[in-house]
Every structure is written in structure tokens, then in C-alpha cells.
Length: 499
Ligand code: NDP
Image 1 (cartoon, protein in one colour):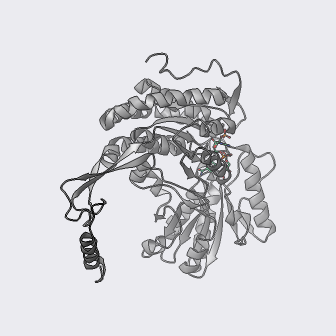
Image 2 (cartoon, rainbow, N blue to C red):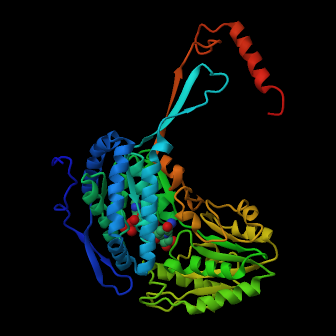
Image 3 (tube, rainbow, N blue to C red):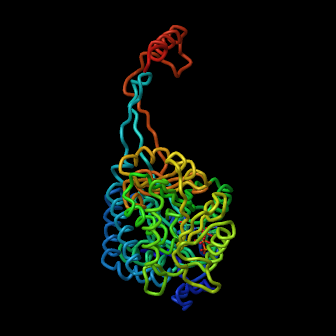
């Protein structure tokens, strides 16, 4: 690597910030606050490197990404440990997150060629003299702005797919998980030795600098409010964006469901990662015939679960989130709701106990707004039609879950959501072939799967004339006779019949 190719060093970055343990408040690491000039420099290096990376071809990129995959897989406990320290999530959960991220990296690396390489498409009857083909080309440099809740799995859904598609990437991790971002970039450097994937750290302003640094696409994961700001900034330069924002996902339980399994899934979906999951379960709608049985199961299981140091439910990663969770619980209780497990969140708490709320009005914050804590509302419904209507009744539409032995597909097909798990929970996120993303306030664009690869490309179409057309239509030499022939052909093809 020559010096001009090298990633800029941090010597110019005077200011630093600390990453803190949410469980204890202790300093976990200190990182540079990268300013606009540094971010621009990093993007310039990425721009230069993108020509080389693109020229490597699918096979060369696959080899490089396989090297990276091996480094992560061989040191996954180390990455899980950094993640656990920065987010407070239990070590086992952190390990599972790394495992799923590696699986996505492997899939993206090995399927990019098949999904994106040039392929022939039908030219259609009117253009039968043409050979038509399309390929998906890399955009150049992709800026990835990541969240803290799944600081490896979520950004990897953009990073791996953007790299496999032939882009270089500059990643700005959340200010709560800069160490995870740096670990990923360092491991890439160790495996590949080129500035194909780089990281910049800092607060929101560093993310804003990335959106303004001339990248070719921004992949953002975080709140809907910040997603709007990112989109507004990108509008200035017509930079495309993919927005993975929040959710208010519902789990629906039909009267023929395996109620014990549904209760287990509801609890895990609501409380794993301390409820800080964009596609976590926040609302449950249960058919009246199995409501009491479901609630008994859920309460019994939830009472066993404790949020505590070393427990299955960790602390709330972002301190300001505790105020939001407290507001939602207090509002639900003030408006006639009851907490069957848990209750008001004490001042000064770092951990929020699993909380099951019932009788909560449908228009309250706990049912309509993203809580992002280990809480869940449970409502009784007279029919699955009512469950579907209420599940579809928020401005978010990310994931969803259905428990039913016979009506799973039928109910899933009527849910307004980007993804649905039937008789499982969040299962769609672990399947690399399925697209992940939402509609409405949950955002747009897709990560994962073939759609996730194409998200970081632009299609290039080629029409190649194979032989002279029977009717010369795209020329000033076109005659009235040919126009009459065209009319006749189109009427013959499309003017009658059922097809
Ligand atoms: P934000 O949406 O504020 O932050 C997400 C990312 O964007 C972070 O890396 C952040 O950097 C960065 N950022 C902040 N401001 C800007 C900006 N103007 N331009 C570019 N990048 C910016 O989320 P929070 O972390 O504050 O969480 C708030 C809420 O978002 C949560 O309560 C939760 O409801 C939701 N959320 C949803 C997630 C999901 O998976 N969909 C993930 C995380 C949060 P920095 O952290 O340094 O400020």
C-alpha cells in the first residue's frame, strides 16, 4: 500500500470521547471524535480504493471477504466481549449476534456474483430483434451509519452486502458502540490489508459529516426522527438512502395456537436484548378463547426472568431510553392499564425489569410508540380480523409474528409489515436469503438477501441489435405502412382475449 492509499491516521483528531459500560458506568474505551475534514479524507481514500475493489471482480472480492469471515469466526468471542462491555448484553446473546452476522457475510460473499452479474432478459415481442441484458454495478462508496442495539448484526446487513456488491464502505458506529466498529475495521484490515472498509467514530455530527462527504449511498439504522434528518441531508446531493428505522411489532395468537410456545416467543421477543430490538415484540393480540391461558403462561415465565448483572436480561444501553420506557409504563398505568409483571421504572435504574401490561388503551404511547425496553402490552381480541386490524394500526410496519396451527399464512398475508414469522419469532432476520426492512415510519429499502445486494448497486441495461427489425420504428425513415403494421400487430397481441 502506498502512503496515498493509506487510511488517514488519527493524529489530527485532538478530541476524544469515552465509551461507557451501561451496567456500571465504567469507561470501556476512548475513541477519537472525527471531524468533517477527517471524514472527508477517509471518504476520499475509500473513493480511490473503490476502483481497485471494483476491478477485483466477484471472485477476488469473495476471496477477500472469506478471509475477513475467517478472522471474525476465529475470534468471535473477542468481538462478543467488546460488544458485551459496550452494550451490556449477555455474553451468550453477543455470541449469537456475531454468529448470525458471520452467516450473512458468508452468504453475501458467495451469492453476489449469481445475483448481480450480467444476465439475459426477454426483449419482448415488439423488440424481438434485440438481445437484452442487465447487470448490477457497484455505486462506489457506501456510508453506513449504525445503531448500538445490535452493533455487529445490524450494520453487517449493509456492510457485507455493500462490499460483496463491489463498493467500499465507511462505517460510523453509534457513539455507544465505537469499540465494536473499530474492532470490525481492524479485523478487516488484518484480513485484507486495504482500506476497503474503514471506520469513523464520534457523535451524531460525525454521522452528519459522512452524509455530506460525497458518498454514493447512505445506509442508516436508528430512530425514525434521525432517519428523516439523514434523508434531508442526503437530499442536498441527491444521495440515495436506505432507512432501517424503528418498529412496534405485534405478535398475534389465534385460538388454535400452541399457547405455551406463543407465550415463550412473546417473552423472548419482548425481553431479549432488554427489549432493545427494532423487530422485537412490543404488542400481543390474543384470541379471547385462549387469552387467559396465554396470560397465565406468559406471567409465569416473565416472573422467572430478571434484569440484573450477569442475568438473561441486561441493562438499558442508552441511559436516555430509560425515561422513554418509564413514560410509556406510567402513561399506560395512569390510563387504566395494569402491570401483571414489573411496574413503574424506578428513578436511577440502569436495568428495567420485564413488564407485562394489560388493559392498556389502544391509543396510548405503550401501544403506538416504540418503547425499546423489556415491556409488552397484551390485548384480548374477539377475532383474528380484529387482531389484524389492530396489529396494522400503528404508523410503524417492520416485523410481525403469528402463532396459529392452521391460519398462519392466511393471517401473515394480511399484515402490513416487511417481515412475518409464523410459529417462531424474529426468525426472518437469521435467514440470509430473506430481505429485511419496513414500510411507513419503519423506513424503506432492504438489507439481506438478493434485494440487499441490489440495494447497493445500480442496474445497467444493454439492448444489442441482433438483426435488422421487420418494421423500422425508431428512425425518420419510418413509413405510414409500417405504422399501420404496428397498429395491427399491437391490436392482434393486446386488443382482445383474457391474457
Ligand atoms: P439515532 O437514530 O439518534 O442514532 C442512530 C445513528 O445515527 C447513530 O450512529 C448516531 O450517532 C447517528 N446520528 C445521530 N444524528 C445524526 C445525524 N444528524 N446525521 C447522521 N447520523 C446521525 O438513535 P439513538 O441511538 O439515539 O436511539 C434513539 C431511538 O432510536 C431509540 O430509542 C430507538 O427507539 C430507536 N432505535 C432504533 C434502532 C433500530 O434498530 N431500528 C436502533 C437504535 C435506536 P450517535 O450515536 O453518535 O449519536
